[in-house]
Figure 1: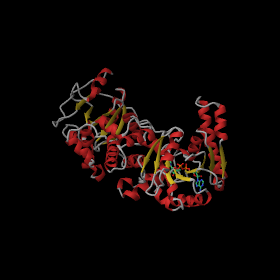
Figure 2: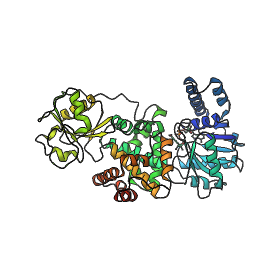
Figure 3: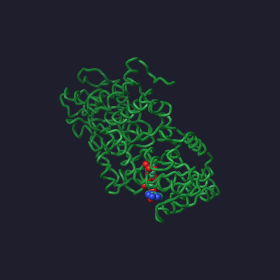
Figure 4: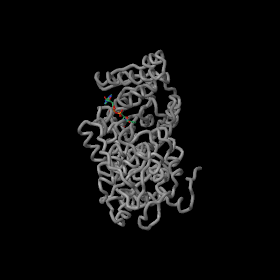
Length: 493
Ligand SMILES: NC(=O)c1ccc[n+]([C@@H]2O[C@H](COP(=O)([O-])OP(=O)(O)OC[C@H]3O[C@@H](n4cnc5c(N)ncnc54)[C@H](O)[C@@H]3O)[C@@H](O)[C@H]2O)c1
């Protein structure tokens, strides 16, 4: 099927970018908004985005005029009468989408393909509301649409032969990489991504760590393009909240229940970038007061014995870095940095003065998670922060909870990917490609699992499960069995 004229309904965060992608590829686009005010906003998105591309030298001014010249903007759906394809990007609410598709079904030619950019809703339910269920698919772009390479093309049990392949071929023509998937809430990417973002909000609400520290941990420690709260603001908290609700309705998994904080922010109209304020946008954070730095000890890194005293080799080079910066080790240190291999409190209670102990977990070569126990003094916590900064690391202060921040967010996401693959929904390569191209992650979940080591992730999940008793944190049977069998890579066909 040749697609030359396309309609885009809803020109908000996603729709404006999708219209731009089509126009850049030479297609004629009719963009439809709800009213004149929203249409003006949509026009503004298009003009700003292409204007920025010119400023950055990625587009000639003449090319920008051609792109904008291919886009016709209107508030009348009736103008979609002669298009070959419609992609809708209106809010993530099933009733709105069904009403729209019924109307599009009336307006458009019978051969026109109707596609939803929904992140999570049932494409089957939307298709069934029309008189052309075989011609309805998901065409799920990622934010920002002109940049992200992935398009999930969602077929249903009633898709007509060839439609998914035709839409996937169109995505290829747009310069995107299509991944064809079946119709499950959240498809591949949002089923894996959103629970992780939601869990970050839960950790913040539980006071395990703060907004900026969680963001820094995931960005600098794991190498993600941005932290979870920055990403939630980019996605839009209303959209994220709706997607979580849809996931929960399908799975009844407690972890998929939207974090109460999300609901509160959405109700307050704090939606993220599109409203100017969400998790961010308030006053900048206050830097904690500087500590009075004294002597330190670095201990641990394995073993069950009591905290022995400073070990020159301990701390993954932390001790060396601190010595090089001119700090003194002591047998009676002001702060004891304990390389965390179990709950820090178990080590702290063996010290003559448990208030001085802070758990340290080095993540990559930039981040040190610093776990304070219920007994850690404010002075020791702030001295630990200052010490690791001087050692050239970014401190992430957190509570003494299994997995601290990074493992508590990363490992369940990896586990979810294993379960998704094991359920037969998507291949390892498709899941890895989807997370790299849809989220800009440096590696897909299976690549991350293999580079971290399967046993390490399995053991981390066991510790998380033991602490939180959350069924979904129990290692996926496939992961557990591979570790038991001594296999370090996932079998691929
Ligand atoms: N935000 C993301 O990161 C993201 C990523 C991929 C997919 N999506 C999906 O894209 C869809 C849109 O999300 P968004 O974030 O762009 O939302 P948004 O709120 O930024 O934009 C929605 C737009 O739809 C318009 N609209 C509402 N009702 C309309 C109607 N009846 N006719 C025409 N226009 C109408 C609104 O005026 C608004 O401009 C959702 O289904 C969402 O799940 C979002």
